[in-house]
Image 1 (spheres, rainbow over the protein chains, first blue to last red):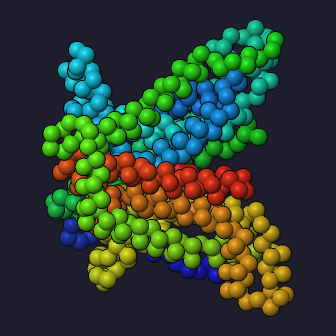
Image 2: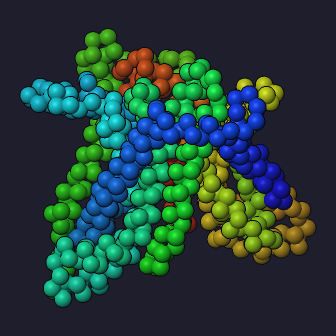
Length: 272
Length: 267
């Protein structure tokens, strides 16, 4: 009964993935070579990896920190219950709202004719005159936050539930300030889940293609766009180079996954 | 010391920041969608009527929707019997399949499509050149984690053994048991997985773009590049589709209080 399933995953998942790994080491005419993979360490490929990792790292860290703050604000005592359920519902939608429509939503907000840009311009402060350009790395990061933030909120909310009210009361009874509570109790307890969530966010941004493609018309130099250019731009003189880049992405994500699994295991100790 | 009942000021600030960040782009898109494509002035419904009267819109929307239905049908046919069998006879395999279900998360769509294009190159054109073949085949893998975790939660909440024994002692065959006894009992799990799959397929751009198929997201990108203001109404429409799929998901999930995986993605 499980045979069709395994046959399907073999055909559509393992063999294609395997063919990328093999293709990364194939020569253009025949035989095997390391040259595709070593080319990755040269311009412009190494720059693309650098930009990809920078964008993913920045949005994972900032998205992670802000997501934590927003999730905590919604969950903590004093905040009405409906805020949390509204936030979770909306995050479920927003985490799924990526790609082409997201890029356009940001163009209408912060693009050259965007609502905020025009508003600023009419009130004497034009963001474009201060070096802001939506169709750049910064713009891509700003747009990515739209799916990073809700993902963080969804992932970290259960961990925040694990922060018991008693710990907070105990620490304030012992004279700890708000800051001390977070420094010595909150963050250490949440640390494994936080790191796990940030790695998840990193992978999420690292794999993204459509948003950056649509926002910058393919001009931002990140790995997925470079791979895409090889296929859609009819410049496919060496498909093995695209496969080597895909292999490189896979390697970066594999490292992230190896870090993620033990952290997840440790985080599970506190999640009750 | 009694805990304060009132909302903390810092909480208000953070929630307002999040509210602004999430809603301003949507409001901006809405305002854009009301502007005239010729003059750039407000307010007109012309962009919406342009969309509704565009034959390419209906054509690509239909392709994406049918693709979603096909993906859902294949996924259910593939995963329901598998997960059923695993729960019934080979529980040892469950962690193996759960591990496999994480793989599509680790492999970015851009890597997946590179592999699929290489591996299936040279296959017959009824498969390779048709969205119903190549693209649907790839989308089943994209849907795999969401389908698996929804269905697995559904199967865990029912007593597979008793249901199967009861059904078979009444003389039902495997097929009858699966369709008439098991499926109705995991209906909300199957629906949850299906709505997630619908949201994924309706928004998927990467694989469709690299394998040169003309789906709904490709059409949105085309309009983005060519016509400013009608693109705004399309964007809102696409957001509406995501909302509809996610809210349906919440409605079917709420019944049994199950929390389904809610992170799909068309990044």
